[in-house]
Length: 107
Image (cartoon, rainbow, N blue to C red):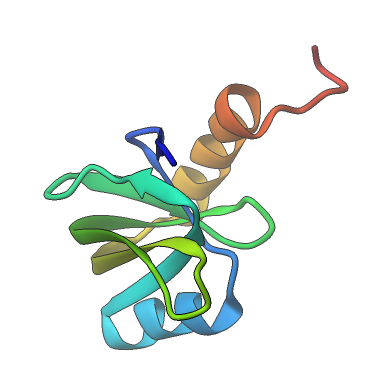
């Protein structure tokens, strides 16, 4: 059992429903597998399922636990600060591919 630290600028969604709720209602949560540490209280860039930068969010809670199925999970609650403009999204997405998501063809 151990905690995996997330980059302080990455909040990547794996569920369309979780992303929809954040963008539609301005508040949402996502569930990640494993114990992870998210920077509670900080603003971070949120990425869609296809690694596109879409918004700035503020992490308001990060709760690591073992669920009823015995799996280690982390729930992350966040508030939408604002959606990114097309230009901001393009730049942040390009940087994230280079820094976090690992574009193997460029290496």
